[in-house]
Length: 472
Image (cartoon, rainbow, N blue to C red; front, side, top):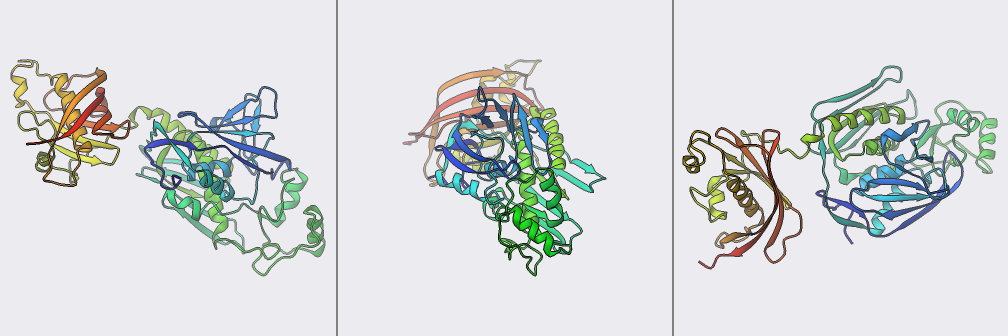
């Protein structure tokens, strides 16, 4: 079984098989059966109300949020689904991109008030890697959200991963000021997912009177008691919860409850931030700092982030080239890998490489040999040589490098969907990006190649080549 935490970040994922989870909705009190169904690439997370005529659906998207009173609720096409945040956070933490969520009721089951039961169910069935790239979007500049009335401040800053810091301050002698952090997505399932929702004792009467926690129980929420309570209040609450008695422990929590973490309330608020921001609808990387977050603020913030991504979406995937950074491979190391030599060695250095992609650089000068005949007085880099440069970059990625004594050669088998969109001329810096579109088998490499000059795509092509060990 593929580990959910170890899932390849370069590809989309769904679940390997159906999962059914049943339980009570905390606000409606209704028993709901929820089934997660594998979905095709690009499907995203979609909720389907199977109990309604026609089985209407609503996509997990901040544009469809209609209520943030104590939870996050979506509605579209006549389908309304409440309390989606814990499940959305679990799907994010386990890196599930595509799933259909079928419900025979209006609310996601609350279970123990955390995302842990969802994570455990997802980890039990495992993930299915799909043959589709997962595109992460970047934050180009700081995005801020401020609500002076609620004393909320949130900011998303450019960062190369997804990271969250959350701070809560309810002016409570029990909770105090708490801070929680998610430094890596891989830490979510163990450090954040187990943290339960919480409420203050003095809020319960209001919540019950407004029919907001019909499914509430001391087993699915932390109840904080930070003000004096009377025996009559405890007796009344015991009747609501169908308990013989309810007590307050010395720590200020109902029924001798033990926290799973000293900062469990702050971590749960961070969990809500993750779940609500998953409604942006695009995978993105940023450092999120959230001061006194809540569902209303989280969703408003998600909408600002989504708007920013949509405006800058065309920039997604454009490699960033910093000539001051030390390259992964310089020209001398490249010569030890590729058989090409002047005037046919068409890459100058490699600036980034993973198991799935490579980014190389070719600085175009007036002194290139081919400019003597293509074309005198109107120098243009030949399209065929641009494609050759891509192939050489792909060779750097695909050629085995375990034994420096071994030498390999790369041969074209096929070129498809080749497009030349802009001229490349002296003075341009070509950024060559090659991405594997299928695993390498028997030396056969299938890749998608893109050449950028600045933030413009100048050339695209799908290449198939064969890596052959040299016998010379």
